[in-house]
Length: 587
Image (cartoon, rainbow, N blue to C red; front, side, top):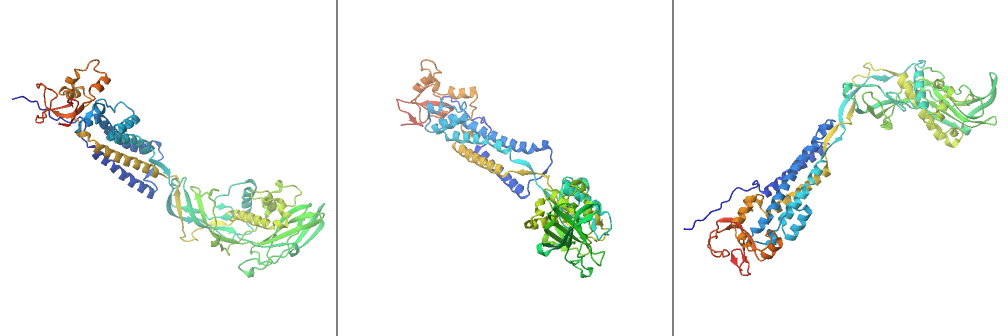
């Protein structure tokens, strides 16, 4: 009996991990990222993070490590496919020609070269895995920008308690002077508005139940009542106005004297028993010709505690006569208006970036509040104007202050609306400072348990956010890898191509030692490494990889018996009389 040697399968040289199964596992990476994106968009981020820059590297490194691992595994799949592609050609029933297998090598070429060569050779498994590896190289780039820390404001509802209120003060109280000094600095030197005031509004002081060290860099939005002046004015000009203009001696100099007959107006807009204002005011003394502007007080005739009225007179003196004279009489009053306001904590400061905007529809009269009398001489602007100027402190601020209008408007009757608007605004700004400094008092429980709801905002809160664009790109890349990996695995199952390590010299030598290739190759003349000889000598041969009978003792080594057993796993060729065999049958 002839002794036969049986060659059994050993362990695969690669980890036995079906590539199609691994490609399907990448599908599970899509779901957590999609869920995380939904949570991030719904909650304005995944979680709060600190401003520590070292921690910021975590959400850059971790996704990158995951994608780098995915890229390495797809690279392993591609390497397996490229290294085993020549052997896979030999396992076909028809075998492979010399140029299709024995001279083919996808391991020593660039990616683009392998793509072109695989297309030409119709090795679509190599094409699919090479494209998958190429796509995987972009996963790391996209993953590095997947997460970032963004500032997302966060609001906390809280109740605020008014600590002060406004009351009817004593008109003789001299504390109003300090408010006038502050108003002067605001109008003439661009001083910012003091705390609890802004523009024409005066706010009650507030307190909250939160430690001050926890409110730094926060701001609160609150709708609260603010006090502002609300004068009722009556404008006269031309024939509507009665006046008397003369020259008189005042001390040692000759001056112009102007007297205006003011309209009779009620001292109170809500209480008719307060009487009416005086019809005449103290005469206006003007030192020179040119534009002038003066303000005078019109006291109430029968009630000292009633609100006073203010008479504003402006016009021009030319050629010793008064021309274009206008006058406006205003009954002073106050009103409360609800105002959405933003305070910067911890000091409850109001910034110009978010000025309070009163809700005029909520304005309501403050009948029990007494508007203090103001002497415009307290503005102390005599050093800022010419010695012989005909403008008093109020009108000097009107044409030279922060909200100044051109002085020519005082001479032009067509600009009366602009002058009236400027007078009203400046009057409200001045009185807001007087209200805050002169009419403010501690609440002392008079407001009961009144609370004002507000929302504290943390503008610098950092949230870990997942970028939607990066997520979609990453999902597209992973889906592409999934499809390419499955296609490559279906076209070539690398676990069943070769049971030996193709990178081991001994393993490759064993595939050739038991074959008939070496015996045939001994007849080749010249350099055995010359590939042109191989092409010429083996051009009509087909090469196979599989089990072949040991025929070393046979007279004709090229003859294959159909009933011979397959005993040795090797690479062998077949050719006979110019005819190439098809499998184990001659064609």
